[in-house]
Length: 460
Image 1 (cartoon, rainbow, N blue to C red):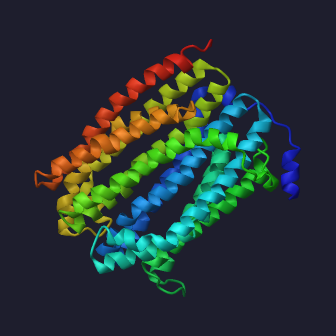
Image 2: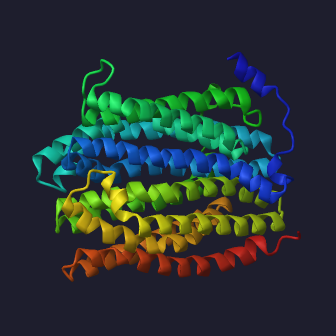
Image 3: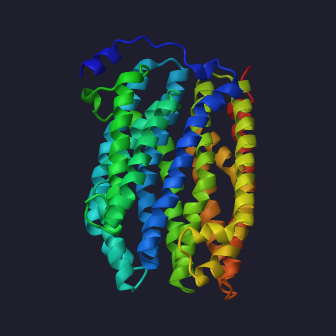
């Protein structure tokens, strides 16, 4: 508690987001996040490689579990995005009393989120899996895996919130330390607990879930300590965990649309799994592999995105138009460059990527064209991701929500269903390109009035 008292008495200096040269600032803010998310994406891939060694059914079970896990992450991360956006804007306004209130109300919401999903973990897994497959082995694998991840989800909620508090004040390097700690725990304990190494019992798919939970708790612990000892711009107090309706409303003005945006992905994957399952369970496994592999490309872009949001939000609060527009331009350029590298990897080495997951001949037959076709949309997605972050940073979460809803449920899912009627599974993958191109058009249409009203009118 002495660390917390010392933190409360510390002076607050001018934040670097208001004065550091933007190229250097964006690199310093984003690079640690990009590295940590890149490492996290590697973990996701390695995790699935280990699970694939159990059996294809185990890999399929983890793929089917993704929508519910994504829903949990969506609630945790969406709430944290709302905290991040509001807190960074208050820092830009030099409203430090409000900064502390936002942080502590955010912690209250984090605890509420954990309790809800812990309850879900006891009751939802079995009926959820039974709604998607009648394969008894896949069901048992999935129920075991999902129940452990949900019941012990305090770590993921705490880690995401505390990491976002660090990001909100520009301390992305410290956030990277937390994320890398969690990833390291996952990577170390995954093979140990799955296969029973170093004297531990072989837990199979349950071991994969336990390793994930251990990593989340490790990240939460480290990020909390870093906030208390290093984040002098935020004063965390457990006495401040009292809900204030006005602040919670402002957090969720951005947070709820963000939650909906990310949760839409759960709906999409759920129904795409049903569409793909009408062809074969191997098709579901291929889609699951794609999700793991695309994180290799998308995670660094999301890291860039996470670094740019507080910069735009801070300078929006400080009414600095030039720094806002320059940040958006640099972010779009960097995101597109990353995505182009991803396109090359997917186009040139699809068989080698699938071979990492002990792919059968059938999985290769379905997966090679899938990876090559889907990768075409990556550069377009880069622009959509950055534009979505601009809406979040400006507190315009509704626009971000609309774009995601339209892309995934109005464009992508109907296109996938219609293309599946051709009887050729390869045609389904073109729905990703169709949806992304149309969503870019929608993004630009929605951005223009926001830019004209909120940014263009600024004096500098």
